[in-house]
Image (cartoon, rainbow over all chains, first blue to last red; front, side):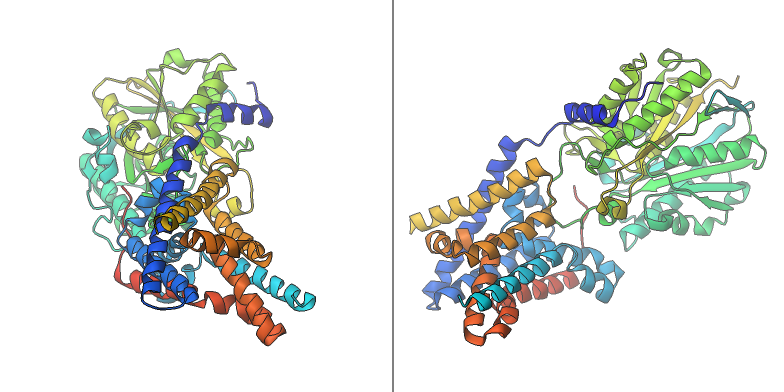
Length: 147
Length: 337
Length: 120
């Protein structure tokens, strides 16, 4: 029986495997992500009109988006938007909220502590870990260099 | 039993498939196999509280249905071979607990249906059992949870990915003259061709399928013309194309004789399953519905059932290991001799 | 006013499109992309390159996770200026505390109330 080399097989696999239709996915990500950001801008303007300062308005807008994304996850439709939106629903802060809520929901069946409580960080945990770690490195550099 | 060639075993008194049943859920009920499946539940929980318990419930329901159709009770079965995709095979263990049948749990990923049938056939042929049963299941939700992401997580599927079937199949083998019969089998060897992409399992399994089918042809001095249908377990679209290309190198032309359970169970045009179905319930459900029914009615007479499995785990994937494949083959026939 | 929304849409959309390019062409997993974007945000924030974009595009720059990283960098620098070395440890989390805490708390509440559903 003839045996194909791994290299030749890899070439064959690439030939036979359909690729993602990027002419569709990239525009969809652009539009979905753009709309979420524009919605964020609307919340920023709303909070500014309430008379809060700029930093507070930005934070409050992010929290509002987080709340909406968390609810959409609970109501089982964030994943349906994500199917079309791709990175457009992943990259905004709403994607972070979804990444926290989805495993919390799913692993509730394994209990409130080691299920919901621990698995809540399964996907988003690394974001916090490396975000904080790089922040600390920057802080140390800023301290040493007296920025 | 006698050995033929390198890896094939031929049964001198082919065990008869005396009963079989299948069960599936909503998405499968909207697919082309729906009319052949015994139990279709719109409720993916099958009345249970968790996905894992739902999978166990499917195994229980399908095993009892197969017993009912064979007019047997659990006490008539001497040995039960079952498996699923969940860690430590809990789908089978909890599902079949209350049947009280001597039990052996198996794991061969999506090739488990063929592996359990092979085990059952050997027990029956050797008279270690009068009746032996094979049961295999998978559940979309429990598999996603274990292998991929939580259900509500927003992710996109790549075009080569496959959709885990929520379904199970059960078959009972015994002595007798009722077709179809298990005439021969080839136990597959593990094959690694360097595939790492978990979203392209068809590519990981196709070399194993080609190897097993080629080995069977060589051992029995046959080729595709000797069979009405060569049906692989969930290679899906990409894997099937690769299988044709690999078999072509040995001058076998499977096109026209080949079908794949992963492509039979869903309509790829309308059901948004990317390359097709997968999961060990996929081959089990299609075998225990469409294929065995078609053999009973005489539409198919000589069938090679080749279930394929991708042998990775979430841990091996995270450690960036390759995904090896395996394929076990069973020759089913409506003629005993 | 219209231009503000327009630029939020375009800049935010463009950042997401970059994420989609990474998904389609590099096979990066979503978790990797999120981590990369946050770390990128810290770096861009540290270099002072991101604040101008936030001024220009508002939500288009603050809503993507790069903005989250930028916020970590911004908070860290302010804290180092105020508290010295301790600020390097406290600043990043302090400035993002509201977002992280909100995500965790909302997720907990939602997970307690709802159930996961099968995909169609």
